[in-house]
Image: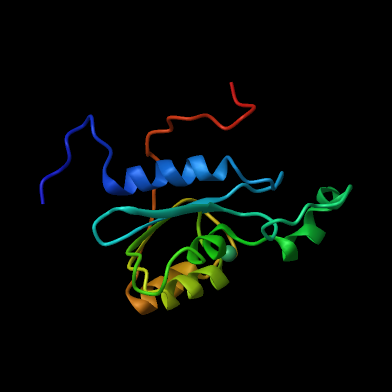
Length: 152
Ligand SMILES: [Zn+2]
């Protein structure tokens, strides 16, 4: 397979750039994660980000306790998988390596390729991916076209 021309994003780069944009919508002040799913023809199925249940408005002080909020956060991959049925997505890009639980879910949905940017230290995703023959690759050099709010 030939390499794409230099002025064109590869499919994984394209996916990661979209995941990055999705992460900018996260309301979590501590960890913003975005994800995108592509089908077998590289068409975008949808994007998602981590957050609270749809329609839930956090009360005053909810975000003050970083640890206490964790169990209520719906991970970007969970929200993403709510957009398609098993076998319809081929590739996932996620700005953070899927946690163990999310990687198990991605296996269940038949995902073949997973790209991530940031390492998630406690995740057992590498072992799960190796066991089930899923391509799990870190990608840090995709073109960062948009800055995170607050960055110069
Ligand atoms: Zn997760």
